[in-house]
View 1: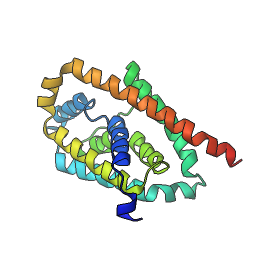
View 2: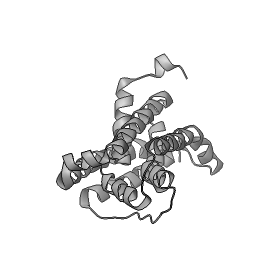
View 3: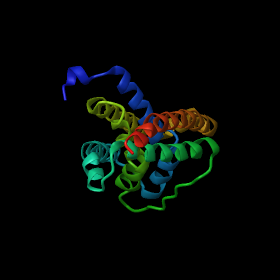
View 4: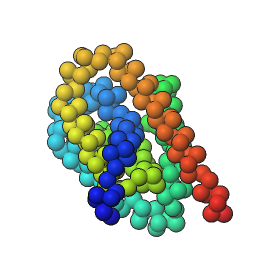
Length: 198
């Protein structure tokens, strides 16, 4: 991997937007506020560092983990596009397919770092992005998103007041549509490879 030849502002921007839509930290503000009320406090640095470790670790080792099960990145990308499609429907239609009832005193790690920030959708997206972009660009996109997550965690109450319930709802719909388009593109670009390999 050569940093200078693989580095691409375009890929960084696209990967950043995908992860930002999937993580949906703005749309998670109500959940974060609820966690703060129930647990007393949330450690922003701890949550950010743990989620960063999970995402980078899965980016590096995810392909090896998949190979143990005999699954290639193209197949995972198609499966991931279906999950992203369902997540987008959740955001657009306001219905819930995936449910999580995790709770506990370590709210900064569970459920905040995992699965709210670095959940199944995020990890699916990371592996899916590997089929499209260079690793260095995905790592930089992860770093950008973790920094955004940290900023949001530091300023949840002012953001909620600024955006209001209507603003948060609009953002969820907008990023849901973006995520839906991304899911369709990932599906259509990877599905021919599966049939060609047959």
